[in-house]
Image (tube, rainbow over all chains, first blue to last red; front, side, top):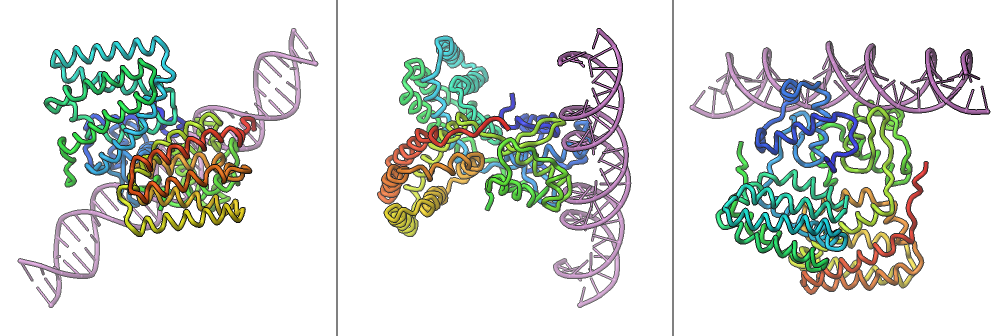
Length: 221
Length: 221
DNA sequence: GTCGCACAGATTGTCAACAATTTCGTCACC
DNA sequence: GGTGACGAAATTGTTGACAATCTGTGCGAC
């Protein structure tokens, strides 16, 4: 399902493995990624690892310096804010498109997500709510059917996981975001593109305001 | 100054050469890019060319199929529209940011571009106007100071040149876009972020409407 | 005449070895 | 005690050859 690294051909799986390892936190920001080590860890040739690192560098997940190797790129708080700002407008576009193109089944699915969200918040299921949040955004992107926007968001999300991740765990966060999520769903169900875009942007603006509270990643080793 | 392919280290220049060749029209859409040929053409090793092709594939300029090589990716009209839609919202963001952050010198520069645009249109200088158009958008992005957005736009622009390119040559196009450009400049000079964003989006929406008239690239060889 | 098949050419994918560069510890020297 | 040069270890960068795969062509069978 990888949208951004579609046309490949070179090293099909190694890049995915490394991406996954970074997302899982197995590789932390600023950690060195030594080609030889990775090649034994993933059972691939060094050339394959090298190709994967080049790809990840273009994607922005990894930083490569000539003759000094690759390391996991650390995202500063400032950059995390910028990423979220771009997400805000692009997801706003997707929400508007979704409001235009949604089928009745799509709307039923969205309403179901809304119900489950209510239930998760009522039951204090933080982790489940976080997963539903992910699913809502993914569904809206899918319904919107904007492949280019989807690719852009996929890449941005890849860089941002560490910051996004902890956000759902903030106490009281759900009570703020739940009504915003429901408003987005309502707007799409009303097939009102402008209202959907506004709702999505309001929601992500609120996320951006909250970002500083999760703290920036340590820049040192 | 390449923002998107910053952290490199592998093949510094080859990717730039190929990118340039594609933009210049030396390589046309769907044209095969044979590694051996490129390596002699650019005086680089095959491995360097290979690395460059991997990078360009991630950037979306090139399409790679396993065991069947790389070719210049053809952008359909539909995809060109999607690209422009994303550009619309992201450049809207940049315009809003520019309205907030512009210094007095920035505003003077923008006004100068506006004056030159008026002059170019009055004098029928289509090519000069096209260049000013490019400069206006670039300046707004620079003033906005949103690096992530700038990177996204850079990549999208790279895919879209062929479509964007012919647009300025359409007869009567300038008389439509000039007032839009001036409105954008006015809004930024008034330091009104919302108005600047709206103006930019109106402008790019008009570009999108015009896109079908430049025709889609032929899909066959 | 057309379909299937094998073979040759072209092209990409992979690998291992070698060269170049950086990094780090050691030691002499001030 | 600190500083700088030297050298070894670690790591990346590059090259060339070889293997695997795809493409097109010609030949024979039906």
